[in-house]
Length: 278
Length: 247
Ligand SMILES: [Zn+2]
Ligand SMILES: [Zn+2]
Image 1 (cartoon, rainbow over the protein chains, first blue to last red):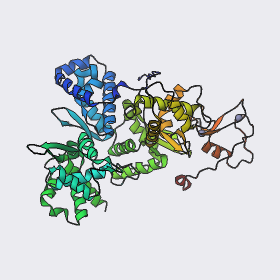
Image 2 (cartoon, rainbow over the protein chains, first blue to last red):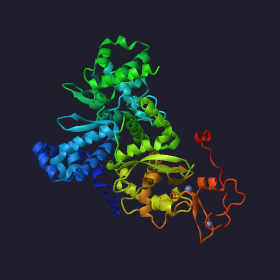
Image 3 (cartoon, rainbow over the protein chains, first blue to last red):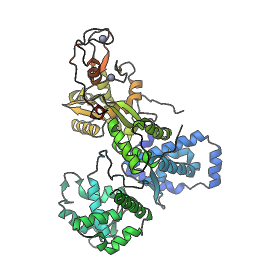
Image 4 (cartoon, helix red, strand yellow):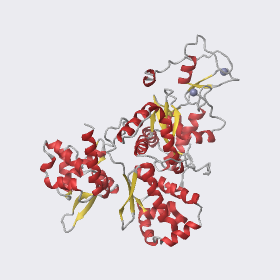
């Protein structure tokens, strides 16, 4: 069914061209021109296409999102429509619906729209127990995960918002100086204020009316979806040899899930699982 | 035929997406782990069926968990591969055009070599003859480092060979691109890169090192299985597989 095309001099798929920032802004403009088709438009569009054509397009969308997800880069609807969906834009809602179903049924992942205004998607794990738990296979661990975890912990413990300086001071105490090149992380300031922000783990915003200019950090959308607050509290408890319950406000937030109910429930099931596993 | 998948399938697939390739032995352990985690019954001898079920749902997405042999140790491995139109697809998001051009040149060198290897000197020389934006010496070295890190190439003592993952994933591409040059192993019929060659010029069959070890094990005087000439190479020892020795 799928033809194997082998262009002799070019082996790259046009869909996976590297994105530069200038392209991004252009896409933002284009998104304004993309209006979500109505359900009757979708219906009419589907009648003109064969099921195989729609499946093929869905597969391309799935692949594209998976590739982006490897680098934790959110996918914009505009970019998806422009690079992949193209002439199928009238059936876009149907394609996204099918892609969502495939992510859930085949990959155990959930496609989540994190920014309804700019229409951005990320993939989060949809399986119940923590994946890292006790996998017998060595997964390459990203050293930056530890750095991120520390920063998210500080923000969470300080009530959700933290001034930039506080983060840098905490890191300095851990011998990670944002002003110096770090052996593992490279340019620490860049990793924290650019990479983690681009991946939507952190939000980094200017505090209004400050002179000189100051910035503050919050949890990003991806962190809300992926990171368990109960796990962070557990970690803090071990670090300070203190019962996690003693931080009552944080404990309540972690276990009622005021901002993300999905997270709280998954962390609860995981702690159940670990206790029953004795 | 596509089947319903359970969370144990999904967890297995997620792990494969992180690690890219795993030995058959590790795959069995992982399979068991996934079944235990999701309280599903596990039949250790049915790994193939388990993976087949995942593949039935992956194939429409142009992906597949494909089995293949490692030329290093002769062990079976599973790799998550991309089966879409062009086989360097998976690399296109990670590598620039000129970097891919050099990678294809490295493949040329490896395929046309006798021992399945390309020296860093040869690679640097071919970097000088690129048609797209040339890579400087330092850039080429950086690129080689990345290709090894991303598990496309393996390096030992300044020589590079195709990784097991690369051979499994790129097999259809290599077979189509290098139809006349690529040879298969006389014993296992997989493509052969790192191997021994029969020195009889009218024969010249190739056999993988681990296949040589298994085939000639216990024979007093090794002869070519095709032309019956004396096999003049050193016969490597069969590597023991700990997981299998128990059975
Ligand atoms: Zn062989
Ligand atoms: Zn021979």
